[in-house]
Structure formats: C-alpha cells, structure tokens
Amino acid sequence: MKISDEKGTLLISELDFSKFDIPEALKHIKFRDLSNSTLMEIKGLHDATEFYKLRVAKAIDNLDFNFPIGKTLDEVEDIVILKQSAHSKVPGVTIIEYRVPTTDGKYTVKIDGKDVNKGFTTGATKGESSIKNYVKTIYDPKIWTDSKLEKALKEALLDCNNKGNMIEDKLTSGITKDGYEIEFIIRDQKVKTFYFK
Image 1: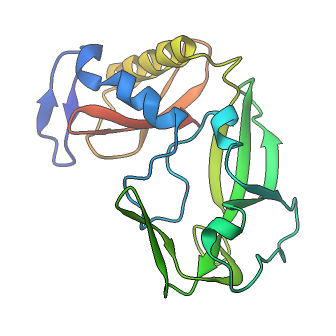
Image 2 (image 1 turned 180 degrees about the vertical axis):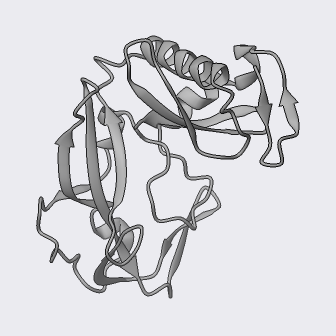
C-alpha cells in the first residue's frame, strides 16, 4: 500500500490492514463522536439504530421548520430531518439531510467535562451553510453487520490503493467488489471515518 501526504511524500508502502485501526473506525461510525463538541454537525453515528436514539424531529420538506425559542439544547430535539431517501445503489443505506438548533451561546452545560450546551435556542436551524443542510448516510445494522462493513472497507481501501489514490488527511474513496463507493479519511495512517457515498 502506498499512502502519501499532499506533497507526495510516501508514508506507508505496504498494505497492512492491522495498521489502519479498523476496530476504532467501526466504533466511530457506529456511535456519536463527541470529541469535538464545538461542531454542531453529528460526527460518527452512521448506525441507524444508534442514530435514532437521538431526539429527532421529522419535518420532511418543511424548510421553514423552527425550534422553540429560549430552550436549552436538552429541551429540544437534537436534529430535524428535512429530507430522507433510500440510497440509489447501496441496499440498507439511507441518506439523511438535517439541521440542528442554533443557540445564542450564553449558557454552557458540561457533560463528562465537555461543553455540550452552549446557550438558549434562537428558534433557527443550522446546516453546513445558511442554505445547505448537513448530509449523512446511515446504514441498517441488520443488513450491514460489523463484519460486512469491515470487509467492504478493506475492499475499498485495496481499490483506492491499487489506483494510487491514497492521500493522508484527505477525503478519498474506493469501490467494493459489489460496486459500492466508500469514502474515508486516513489520518496518522489510521482510518478515522468511512461511509457509503
């Protein structure tokens, strides 16, 4: 395997899956990643069963949806789903477009030493930008078991490697033997995240 940084410096030259820390990558995509609590976007949490443990409001195609004003984040839904569709190529995968509540940033609550509640809701929602929703793929864990996900990831890594496209710290992708595209990021020579594109 050849992984290079953006300057083309070779970082790894042999394909050795044990170095990728795939068990940690599987944990990341299954559960919510709160390591960077300043981000409002939901990191990790691609497992549909775990995803729907969030407090979810569904307002499909209701772009005027607003959260109540003056509430703390634990008093409102974590997200509002505005669009939801089955993946056109990958069975058991759903594409979700969502937004999160905005806050005024005046009030902070710590859970396990991390700031998780920054203020009172303003009523508005936040996406990737003022006009673009966050997008996430979630998978059905009954169809995509951990072992099937691991196999698919390894196939995508091998495909990407064979094409010479592995670049450290940059979103890249590979194709599984079944023709499914998987995007992933490798940081410090480990898979940090992956998901179906």
